[in-house]
Amino acid sequence: MDAKVSRWEKAKSWLAIEGPWLGYLCLIVLLFAGILLAALHGHIDSKDVVGWLFPLIGTFLGAFLAFRFQELKDRRAEQRRQIDAVNRTLLTIGAQFNHLYAYERGVLAQFVGAGERMLNLPATGLGDSFDVRLATEDLVFLAYQGHAQLLMDLTIEQGRFDCAREVVAARCEMMVQEIQPLIEQHNLNGRMVSSDEVKAAFGERMFGALETATNQVYFHITSTAESLLSTSDKLHAAAKKMFPGVRFMKVSKPPPDEKAPTNAAIEQPGS
Image 1 (cartoon, rainbow, N blue to C red):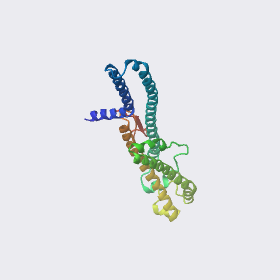
Image 2 (cartoon, rainbow, N blue to C red; image 1 turned 90 degrees about the vertical axis):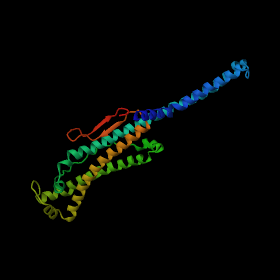
Image 3 (spheres, rainbow, N blue to C red; image 1 turned 180 degrees about the horizontal axis):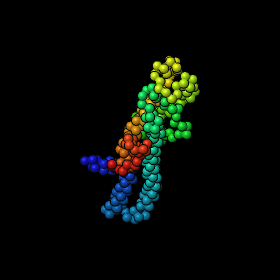
Image 4 (tube, rainbow, N blue to C red; image 1 turned 45 degrees about the vertical axis):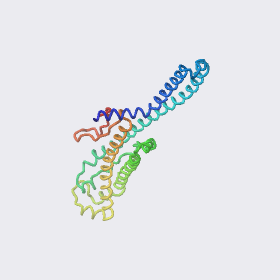
């Protein structure tokens, strides 16, 4: 059943581009057949058919078909542009996921307890050179094909990604400018300290600010990495329906024992 549905979906997608061209071809064949039948039955003089009717119709059809052929080329080019835009978006999502997941796995996962995270999570940011962004303006066609919410979700994902980077940068700045001087001042380096001792050394305001900033980093990095994967799956599924038989990238989280932070692959049609 799935194979039949897949073939039908592929046929519909093909007819959406090639169908009008086939329709015009059928009309031309029927028109010429009608003229020949009329000539054979004496309704039109054969000399008129050869002398002026065929040339006139041929000139008109030539111009008409040239226009329609250009229209067909434009539809094919637009479909290729849309497919490329989807694959570029999936590639960008993969890069953004890799960016966050590598930080989550390489830095955040090293600190488990809440107290340990607050003091020991280093002021290691996500860097300033990462500038890969989702070009949602290239995906406006999704709204016209029944996926307006998906387009909005992709826009939201870019905002979530920016927010995740910002909270990491904000905590790093706090650690360098305010927390590390306090740690040195109160000689908290290299020894076990309780939350009460940290709170007494930092004060209620600074302790609460550090706790909130640390929790925000863990929340935004983890939740944004997961939402990027979820939105990627939605876009992949929508693309497979819009363009049956076309290959699209598939972004997925690697198994826990793998060292590579991401696993983005080209999925075979129908798989």
